Amino acid sequence: MAVLERLRPDHAPALLVFERENRGYFAASVPDRGDAYFSDFAERHQALLDEQETGTIRFHVLVGEGGEILGRFNLIDVADGGAELGYRVAERATGRGVATAAVRELCRLAREEYGLSRLTAVTTLDNAGSRAVLGRVGFGVVGSVTLDGRAGAAYELDLGLAS
Image (cartoon, rainbow, N blue to C red; front, side, top):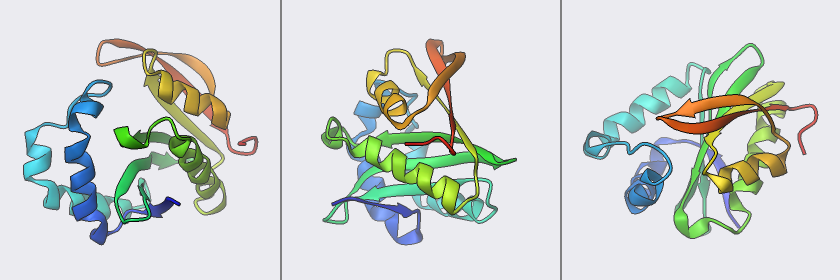
């Protein structure tokens, strides 16, 4: 059983493996992180942990039974009772309900632990998996966006109504 955990320093080695193994898979639907992300990973990881301490961002990882990272689930721009949800799941973990379960758990944490009342998210129209996850959890489309030149949709969820 996978567990959603708040990002910690000791997640770094498994997180780097996750990012390297899935780099090509992620690049098909979101902009590539670039070579510097990998070469400067330790510094970047520490910077994210430092930023998390400010409370304006909440990073989480989905950890599998063997300690491997199956996904990243983040709340960014935390302010005024809201935040933006972003996530990515390992290619080998897709299609099994992992993302839906982790997003539901993050919505619970957002409401119960972080005191948030609404979440937003964006995805491209051709990312059927993300659109399905958001829909299953209860996010509704609230507008159109363009992401790196691709058509997308903006979503919102009232955490009082989250499923």
